[in-house]
Image (tube, rainbow, N blue to C red; front, side, top):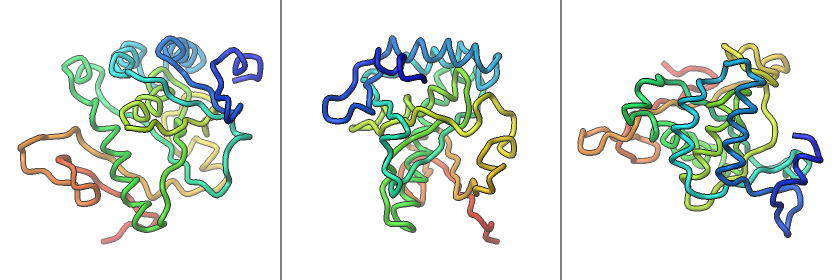
Length: 201
């Protein structure tokens, strides 16, 4: 986002590099991201369904406001638009965040300070805002992504070009109350998996 566009948002008095995005702002983000992604990064119909689940403002932070010692996680959603229409797939992204957050807390003794989308696209530009909105205190979303466009594979991001490891990474299922599932990292009622830098056998 350029400076003029950012300045039109409602910025934080304590930190001018942070703006609060409301539901109207996020709807504009969905349509703009869909246009720039040329349809990649998830269908607009699915993004609008996620938008209905967002009920609070979410902070957007410019990169110059980042603390270099803090932890960023990159977030993405993979799933079926038909499943979303049936009400499935809304807790899985949050559960993946809970899993990787618990892992980082245990192994690196750090909290996650920022979110970032994996790519430009209707769904995946929105997903960090959606996850942040489901938390008691929303985590700021960085005004950037490591792709600059929609990408079909992780090896097509700038992270891979620069030799940045994508692991540890986490995937998770929706919450399955009463089914006997239990995440070993967060103790939630869902299935999750951590992928390590060197897969353990």
